[in-house]
Length: 249
Image 1: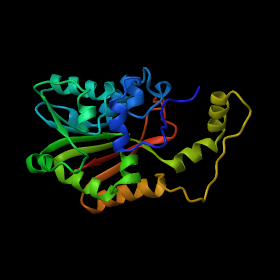
Image 2: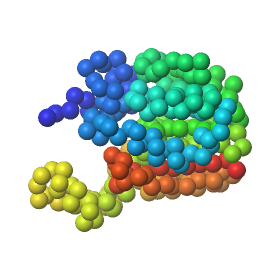
Image 3: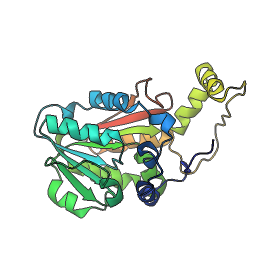
Image 4: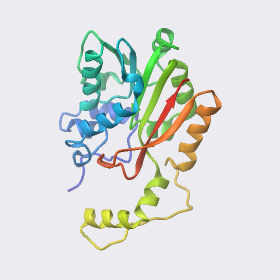
């Protein structure tokens, strides 16, 4: 069955349109087919929380960039309420309208990092920044280094940035070149077809190993720790996506 939207042609403006489309599920509004996210969000959230030690404690400031409107930002809001954290959501007005309200929740409309009020009030004061399944759109249509630099500038000492669910085309190719990847592809398609994998070709707009490793190098060269972390294999795309964690010492 054909999908209702083209998941390969998404950007900030398209997500604004999706937020207003009442024919779409919450998963589809944030750029995923239902089959990829249905019943998986608790697993995704648990994996993320396990990696972010700065979420522990009480009274911290948490920023989520591009939260969308799925259950993930709602779960984050619940955790922040429980731990007496302030949570900042930065997204389009259309997406923010679909998120819960609360005294500990602050919604900041805009296309990050073009949100001056955020930087005027919170530079050097944020404990955790989360951008989950967002960085690929920044890479394709924005300025990745400016996005990273400005995010690192918001952190207080000991603060962390979590760029989660990063699609890596090279990682995907490695997986689908393996016996496990071939079996996965054949089970998904119900055929004996081999997946098409081509190395050493130009793929504009796609993140690959060079981009991921350059992100680590940039953070480290500016005095931050940075790591690539594997996703739990029970996550929807844990075999072909990974996470980046940056920490200010």
